[in-house]
Length: 141
Image (cartoon, rainbow, N blue to C red; front, side):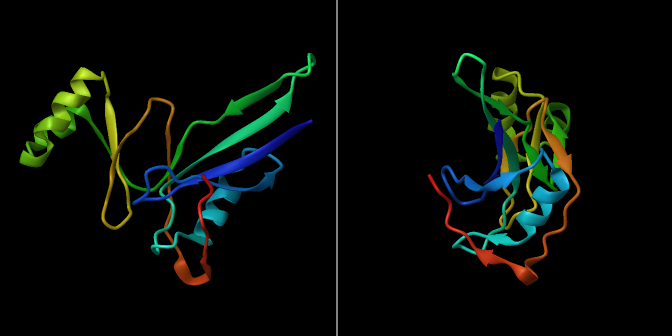
């Protein structure tokens, strides 16, 4: 037997995961619908999510399967893009990307935009925030 949950990340928070009930699968479309109904106490909608499947192995130990991170919209840039843009405020970013062998970053659609490492297994999904039916959620830590 397994249990699947989806965890959303919000801007302006050090660590902000909101676990939303059980799902039947790693359903990206359903997670996007849930994200569209959420807003943080500061009025922000999530910028990414990932799924976690918890299950018991035959030996009784609990095991986890974690999906890649799905970013809700945004703009992905490669190290070469960041370097060629030659923005003065991103000179340190270029050095950090090289030092950490980071090939891509993403700028989120949030206001203000945030910049994150875009891991090799991350997925960029098309998403337009719709705040018409949002309810405030308090992230659980």
